[in-house]
Amino acid sequence: MSERSDLSTARLTADFQRRYEPNFAWKSACSVFACLPGLRGLWPMSSFDENGDAYDLSGQGRTLSYNGNPTYSYADLIPYIDLDGVGDFLSRADEAGLDITGTESYVGAAKGLTLGGWYRPGNVNAAYLMSKMGAVGNYSYWLQQTATVDFQVSVDGTNVTSVSGAAPVANAWKFIVGCFYPSTYLRLYINDAIYTNAVAIPASIFNGNGPFQVGAGNSASPLTGRASLQFLCCQALSATLVRSTFEQTRAMFGA
Image (tube, rainbow, N blue to C red):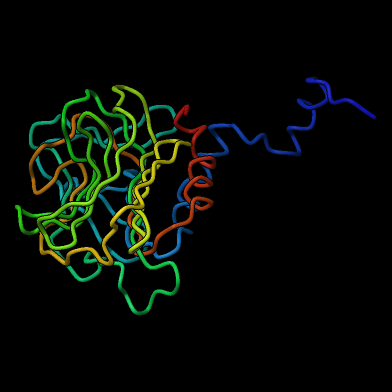
């Protein structure tokens, strides 16, 4: 049986791509996210206009409006928006395409909701990462960090069902994704870890009229930190899809 030496493997990289390579992840990143089933919005933070609005690469035109004075930049190969925790966030008013309840008749067996992306909090203060919510009585769905990283949904605009993961980590990129499968589970992914709540899961998410926001919840509890490759899907993505998305992009973020 032949053995593969480091030298022989290195010689083959001109023809066979290494899996864990930032350049490979970078060139694949947007296409990986664009292929997620039920995609409703994809905001990589690489495309923004003269007003600072973040463009949606899903093809559905859900541009996010600029609030505060965040800045767009990049680190190595990572495009991101930098939020200062004082009124900085991206927002879009309520519309039908964001009112994902998990009961959509045109979606097959994988009804539900999946949302998230890559985040690098600047501190571990309480903050919203991504949300669609108004005041109490008008909650829908959101990702947040408190003492833990949490994914939460509301069945009636007030009562909340949640799943919690590990404590937030400052100054480190994390792939954070929430998934809702009606009447079955809430699932939270943090890098390659999976956290699941399968107890008393609602059959649907409240169809509220609160805004959709990245970096805040109803314009409050803003995030201090960076966000990249943000996405929203109207389907419950499988663990295979979510973890494959992480694996295909992790080298770009040093995760």
